[in-house]
Length: 434
Image: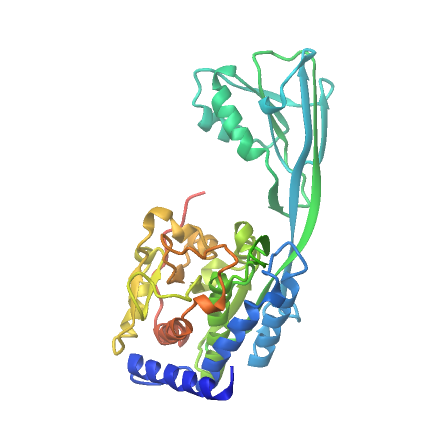
């Protein structure tokens, strides 16, 4: 792009912003940085940012470099990373005999973080049952929480349930690294009461070092009260080629949210008005099951977190039109209402999540802190029922409305001003029971 179109684009974005707010919120440089950051994160050079490959590292380094440029302090490690390990356990083989009778493989389910399990009747193992008159799902769950190694004998009348559960539970799974060996529970579909038995389960263990990227602006008068701004920087990597394109760039999902997070960090650092500590974090492994945000959220005191604004896919107009964002779990706290009050002199509107049947409130990186009682919400514009580019190689910057990202950033900047400055405190979310 030559310089003349760049100037026209910059002027047009300024004009739209001025019309929207009657004032300039983020600077001309910050507007230009929105496009720069977005294009870098969603470039082919990032190779789809898969969390389980080396392709995630250039994105992490870039985000860390932006945090350093802005002047944030590292949240955890000096390189702005927050490192943890994720283990992938994949089944290799399983076999069992009871009273010298073989049990078919699809009649065996094993739970636990064991890699090589070998039991026989000389082992000290608890024996339990799921009987024909039991509530299968309820009793299955109860046994899965056992604190000791257990063989559970399941009545064959539950074969259809058993096989369905097995397809889900015997597949590869990811778990946070645990130095403690968890009890193993093996379910066998059989009528035999064992006098002799042999059970052998083998699995492959792969270890993946993962890392969030996080920085802070320390609070002035309320440093122990935290406001979190976040998005996830991982995506799904390389896919089967469509034409000659095999890179899932993840421009909307979620380079748009990370771009907003970094731009807000730059904005708040220059404002220098935050009485509360602001934490800016790019989560990893959201696409695998929100493991980055789970680790982060389980290693911070939730009682000290005043609010969490998690930005997830804000690159296109929402179903409510331009200058709108919807908030998941809107009615679970008054965070959205407070932010809307601060936007009363604008034409920007926050709406409740229109896709409530999809339970988005507990399906994004805000989920763990929300469950702990934090007014932690995701902010999005994604039309979940219409986005044909979601998780495809076509999720590229060219499909986005960059002005939508800019107006959303400005709305969040104004909307959270009272919370950042310590003048407003949103109500807490009701904690989920264990």
